[in-house]
Each structure stands twice: as C-alpha cells, then as structure tokens.
Length: 312
Image (tube, rainbow, N blue to C red; front, top):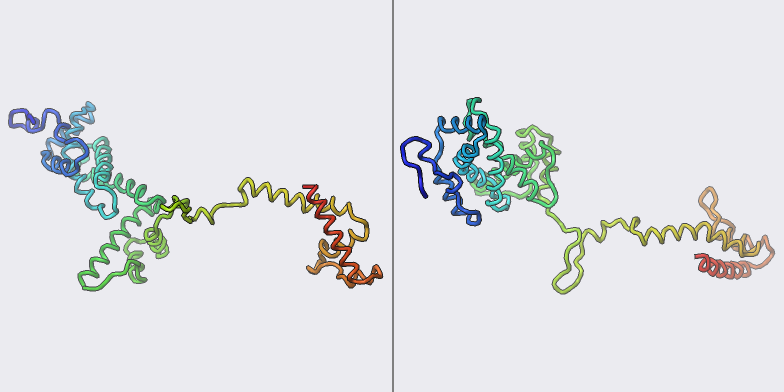
C-alpha cells in the first residue's frame, strides 16, 4: 500500500482512504485492518469536518469515518450476548457512524468520538430489536431503554451471584424487580412485563411438516378464526335459513294437529325458560293416548325432515 511522502498529517493518510479496508467476508481481517488505521488529532478532525461541512468533501468524510471504524468494532463487542453476528452489528454501527459524521459540527467543542457514540449505539439497538426476535419485544422509546437496561442489570445480578458462589435463577426475584424499578425509575409492573417478553420464545404459527411427513401441530390449529372461514360462513348461513324459512315451510306441509304438536314439543319456549305441553297434556286435550301423540310427533318430524332436505 502506497502512502504519500512527507511529515504532515495529510501525508500520513493513504492516497485512497477506502483502500485500507479489506473486502467484506473476512471479519478477522477487517477488524485487524481497522485497528491499524491512523487516528486523527483534534486539529485534523476539525479540518476534515469543516471541509465536509463547507465543501461537502467526500474525501474528508471518508477520513473521518475510517479513523473511527475501530470505535464501531469496540461498541459491537458489547452486544455479542444477543446471539447476532458481529459482522452485522459492525455493519449497522458503521451506518450510525456515517450518520454522525454527516451531522457533526466541529464548532460545538466536542470530539467526534463522543458525538458518534450515540449514533452507533442507536443503529445497533434498532438492529437488535428488529432481529433478536421475530416478534418485537420493545416498540416505544421507553420500552427500548428498559429492554437494554434490564438485560444489563440481569447480567450484573448473575455475575454477583457467581462471585459469591451462589447460583442465580434465570427469573427475577421480587427484591431484584423492586431494585430495578427503583433504579430505572419505572413501575414494577413494567419491569415484570418486559421480563416476560424477554424470557418468552418465538413459536411458529404454522410449523413445517416433520421428517416423517406428518403435519406438526402449531398455534395456527387453535388460533384460526373458523367463524370467518368461507365454507363455515356458507354453512352457517344455510343453517340460519333452514332454522327460519326452512322450518316455517316444513310446518306449512303438516296438518293442523301435527303442526301444533311439533310446535308445543319442540319450538315453544315460555318466559320462564320452560317448554310447551307434555305428551300427557296434549293427549288429554285431544282425548287420545300419550303413545298416539308420540306416534303423530314422530311421523310429523319425518315429514318435516324430508321437506327440509328438499328445501336445502
């Protein structure tokens, strides 16, 4: 790699600042390369920042970004416990770094490293919350803050327990919940809710069939709303029609005595919830035996069933 000759700060930087970063694909080589990149002095940083602000210099932006890539690598190591690839964390952090460089004002009297730290963490936080789980565990700003603080404090409890030779439970005790709520200045219920979200796992609604070809059982089997399934809706409509118009038409095909017996035995409901007349009461009214009333009822029901089939 060729460098410009001379002793000034500009000469110490490569002719093509982007040429010092290896191609993506080898994370170890990338980390080694960015740790070798020269850091900028305060004067160099302000000069490049003013050049970017006043002249929109791409070269100045590149030098500011490259000199702080090691910061992104350092920050990314703090989030390896979430089980996400470090390369992805670094990539998102670099996006935050570039946003910080674009917005950096050298006249504010603060170094770029301090200003960029917020932007780098913000992008990494956003990436973790989107990809740590299929379902978001935190959506509002307050929930996001609680998510990361809660995880950090839980790790602290675990470390303290190990130093004392005790075993720390995965779930929080009431004392730990109260301590977290007091330190984070949130309600106890909010800590418990976030703890529940974090401890829960993702479950596929419709899991893939197993290796033996059998369909795996998933929540989709009992969460599906069968009431709005097209076939179920058609069947429900048909039942409603049969229960109203169909029965009315079937009753019209009966003689008066049979119709009254069916209505009293099956369709009549009194205000107190009781049904209509009994077989013996109908038998006394028509001056026949209760068995005769039952026979008339059975014959009427068969006739109505046939009429309903034809109506449907």
